Length: 225
Length: 159
Image 1 (tube, rainbow over the protein chains, first blue to last red):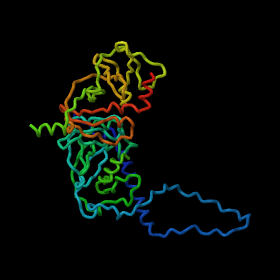
Image 2: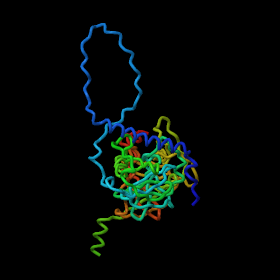
Image 3: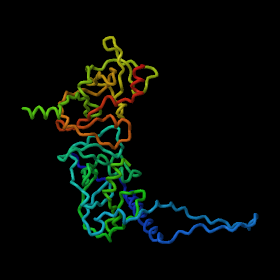
Image 4: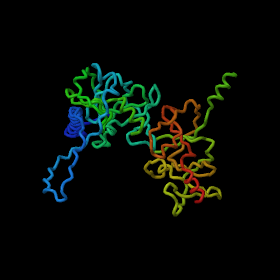
């Protein structure tokens, strides 16, 4: 097997940085939103019927276009137990981006020595089936799923491992497996809602990495979203 | 012996003709395969659907040949010495499917066949009947009846 090139070869540093910035921005926006949330939402002020010819209307101040965040679901409702206490997480590399996954959510790590068998008519993020001792593992093209806008087809050539997800027949194809780290919930900037990346549990500032909610990811995959 | 017979009834052995397409191995039920032909001239049919390569003359009978690669969403490939036309019977019709090569007949117990992953929204995903690990490779079993919709089968009859 050839020595894979470092994936950074394909994904420039600034791309990774911009992606991380986007993730962190998401988390920051939600945090700001959560702080504003307790304020009661007042209804529109009644407009007094005025004369037909009203005073010259004040120029409307251009308001900054802020993309309305999606409704925030109550975080407590579906908070997995592992978020409540310190936990171990595995760091791995997907297209140059470091992701963290709670160890409790992971099954086993399979080296990609053999080929993945593609199946026709499947979504592009489904790489195919990987035969393992435990049966055929459906393999997710993690890079394409997580950062489709920055995906480069060359990334497929340097995949090295498939990490299976506990309780599912799915595995995430990754470019490298790093180390496990101990994380305190306070070290994580948790996302309060689902947002556009329901699989993103939060961001770990110390490691500058995204923490993946594997269960949410598995649900999305199963639903084919 | 009695137990053995019962086990066989519960878990029948099925035979599959395997063929290759784009470096993957596919299987079709041997009962649906009539014969395998070397590639011969396929006469295009004007106005035929895109998945129809054309027609061949099989001992005086006209047989429509399907572009299997196109049907499976694969890119087309040049014809080689290994290219074969597999004559099959499906939906009470005899058609030919063009494949890269024909490999062998494999025997699979029903229990060795896994259901296919159901993540595809693409129509073509529906004709994957199952998968099976055989000879250190994954065999993709194709349900020929579902390879075409009812309308398409009807369309084929009119060619």
